[in-house]
Image 1: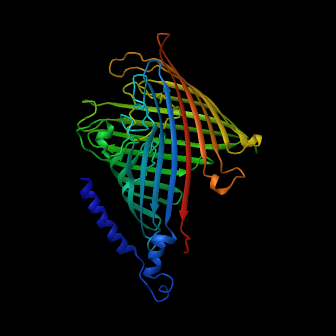
Image 2: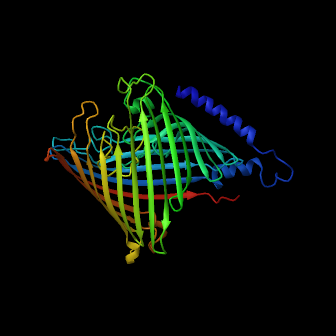
Image 3: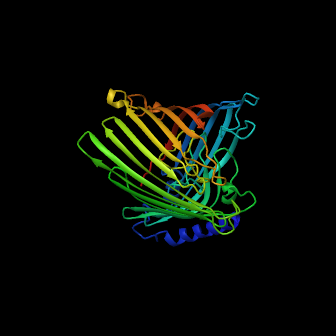
Length: 436
């Protein structure tokens, strides 16, 4: 199916190029000849990017083995300019390679999602796309980066996940939209693309995903967002949120946000063999006073089924470093604080801390109670770009995270773990002179 759609897309792009290429006129010839457009396409407006990332993941479990690995890699990308302001191509190659990937009864890189099972690295062509645009609307085909609420890159390891899709993006006034068909995805720890049925947990069922989203505004004033996806005989899911900021005075403001989502099976009910459906919702309040932010968060998941997030990271407000707090019936409460050290004369350093408690979770099939969960997270982030450092050092970013998790069943500790993450990012890019 992917090959057929790819050929169809290539034909569509060719037609779009012919249809939307502006006719040459006598006045345009000196500044918009075929040669000048090719130079813009291949050089003057082209971009090359090299992104280096190293990632240390170390989860100390209550019982061995521990999950631990150090990976290095990143991606290299090339993107052309817009040919006659209409047609563009691009590609991004990704790699993750083991620096340290133990495989023994006490420590293993399996479970880190940094490498393939067995501690192996890999290369993959995660993006390879062609785009055509007209009047602010852009159609893009084949392998690409998608970040549309529930379908997102899950970029919390060495590599993000990418998608094979055929999509239309654009905006009408203040509203931006996405509409398309997603045929396959490359998981963050895998080199090959798999169809969306397999990604959801149905390995012998080939299916694609129809996806749409709308976004308006920003959290600085008022933000409204909604998305929905449908995978035939597998799963449907819809999400929406609203939020905004209320300025109290020059140094104090309040941000309020709420979210709600519903999900269920459809058609042949391939995932569970029978129909299922559930929901979750949540609210968030942030008090921002200069460089300090204090947060209070709540989420609730329906008891009929655990939430499934096969196509991206779960975007609930109580999502934490280790736990999602989206088990069937779970109620989660969180308090947190963040401090931007620019208020202390140290720009580029931000510290975050949070404590999250989840209770009332059950096994949706049996109704049996599941452990209560506590997670405490600490997060220190550093960016070099606000500092008076040489330009070559400004892209440097460092992030250190630690999480402590305890779970209790009938007032007895049933599981305990500590997880450390250290991430380095550094990106350099070359851009053409852009002589337009």
